[in-house]
Amino acid sequence: MLPKFNEAIKNSIREEMNYRRTGCEALIIQYYPKDRTADIVVTAPNSQRAGEMLRRVPTPLNLGVQGVDPMAGQMCYVSFKDGNPHQPFVTSFFPADYSAVEKRRHESVIPVVPRFLGRF
Image (tube, rainbow, N blue to C red; front, side):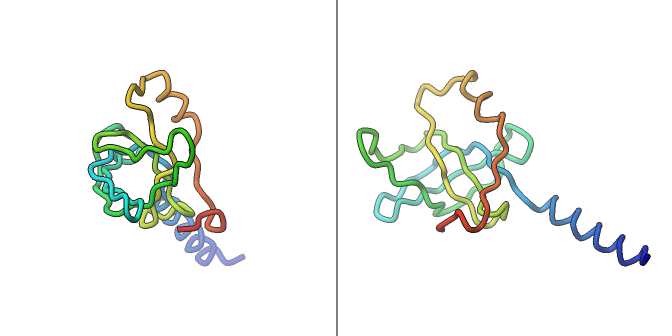
């Protein structure tokens, strides 16, 4: 029908898909209990190397028995609202004795949180 138009649309979609970010592991550098945010270093996309540092990333409120603030050096899992790399938030904290066996379990899913589910 309109090959140039169709190609432009496909290129635009391809660029958007490359721009989207899935969840990844991160290391907490500093935690701010007053506003429940943290400075973290995320892993680079599709690798285990250290990636960029993100500041003041929202963290979950842990009520109940495990309502302990995270510590510097603790691992966490970060998702991105609607796949947008500029809207990260911590979804969970890993225990201090986090092992490679548990790591494989977290790598088996690639969550992208839809915009309507994120409250940040």
